[in-house]
Length: 323
Ligand SMILES: C[S@@+](CC[C@H](N)C(=O)[O-])C[C@H]1O[C@@H](n2cnc3c(N)ncnc32)[C@H](O)[C@@H]1O
Image: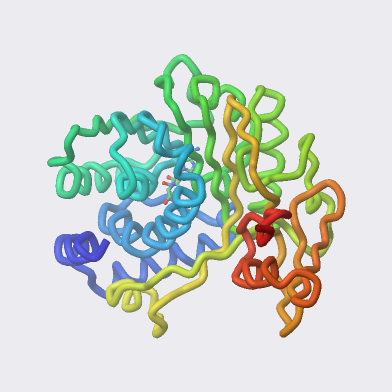
């Protein structure tokens, strides 16, 4: 990623007005449904990649690592609102996809993706076939979408009015769907609504949900929502562009990974921040019953040793620690 930072920084010369445009875009991202987040400038699209894109790649990286068995089989991807190809650059660290299609309304983002693909992926073996469809994906007919192993919607529903009206048609040609949204109540709301629609289309949840029968313990909660947090390193250039001093940031996200082939999880997802004391750890899990877990050192030393290293988003296995 540092090579990409340097390449973008030197080719899309950053001056005061470009940095201000980026700050304006970040401001708009704080309430994307109400402000103009449309990017029609090549420099801004390039700077997005090494600022927002970099943090989102950190989140994608985490999700891919947690479900590497599933992502290993992915050969073709359709990325709706793929921006500068963020998901392509996240996935290629783990494997080479054969075909990646970005369905994107901004020609500036498509242009930057093509430049980055030429610079960083053109010598990939086997070659990756990268193409784009320049359009508003909400108006795309399913016959115009290529058949794919996985379709992705990453931080894009939050920018659309009524993003879910067309989801059933958009996923028609996919075996799996990955949705990532900001880790806010409204991001989670988009995820839960999308999950209902995808269940109707015959998809089953791979992650993060581990409760059975489509139950969600946080669906009607007034004080919490399903989200996770990833600590992502910040490069020197990113710190400069974001006016930040810390060498890292925390990216909150909500996500959903679904497949037409059901896959059984071998544990229950931890969905709260664990509460640690010297002698016990307690947390909530995504389960239809017994969803609050307390593990004490006195009752189960081995399990306590394992569980005390867990964080929100990890899987809790009831028999862990048993020999
Ligand atoms: C915040 S960016 C996310 C880009 C990329 N998916 C990522 O995770 O970094 C949102 C992207 O969705 C695109 N987008 C939003 N609504 C769209 C629509 N209706 N049709 C096509 N692209 C759309 C925007 O142009 C932008 O590239």
